[in-house]
Amino acid sequence: MRIATFTSFLAVLALVLSACSHPAASPTGVTEVSGSSPKYTVKGQYSPLTLDRVDSLTIESGKLVIHGSSASQTVDLPAGADPTKPAPHWALTTETDAGAQRSLVFTQSESLDDFTIELPAASVEVHYGVLTGPNGVEVMLLAWGEKSRCYWGYLTIRPKA
Image (cartoon, rainbow, N blue to C red; front, top):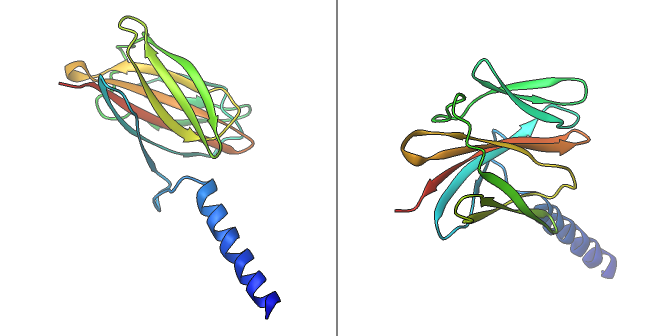
C-alpha cells in the first residue's frame, strides 16, 4: 500500500515539476510574451528555431536571418517592422535568473524608461535589434539559444497614451 501511494506521489510530483519547468506553448510552438512597464505596452511572442545555437542576427532582403554555427534560418519580419528604419536606442541593461525563467530589462537610452520581460532560462547571449514601425511603435527582434534549444521572437513596444 505504501509503495503504491509513494509511486503515485512521485508521478504527481514529476508532472508538477515538468509543468513548472517549461513555458506553456501553443500547438504551433508559439508562446505569447508581454512586458511590464509604466510607460510602454509590450507584447509579442517567441517560438523555437531549428538551429544548434544563435550567433547573430541580420536583415537580408527584408527578412530576418538568424545565424547559427553551421546553418542559418530565415523568418519573415513581423507586421509593421520596417527593415530600413533601425531604432538603436534600446539597451539590455539587466539580466536575472529566475529559476525556469530569465528576466530581462531593456532601457531606452534617451528617456531612461524601461520594460521587463521573462523568457525561458538560458545562460547565453540574447541577440536583438529594434526596428521602427508606424505611429511610434517599435518592434524588437530577439534570438537566443544553444545546444539545439534556440528561440526567436519579437516584441511590439508601444507608448502608453
